[in-house]
Length: 142
Image (cartoon, rainbow, N blue to C red):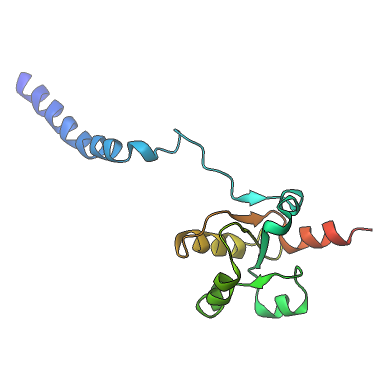
């Protein structure tokens, strides 16, 4: 019985080794240590950025051409490679990028924001809660 118990303990220790190694290696990146900053802003927060805001429209070209936030840049996942250079030429490090698409349930804005952060290496990238409809109702409500 002693040998069986010793083998069970050895197997359990071996099974825990990868997890212990991962915990040590990633100890500075554990999610519960520091909450991730929110990458979503509401319309009032985005308007508060004033002249620092750079609007990024993640909707399809047809929707952008029909109507968009004044001064916004079209940058959608489907035309990423073609549209990114022009947006980057207009961008400066002090600008806050606010990405929107059509409605709160739209994931296109989150995808474009993620790519701006990860692939383009930009900071201060936010997603507008409520999307294009929130901007329209907030700026055209009379």
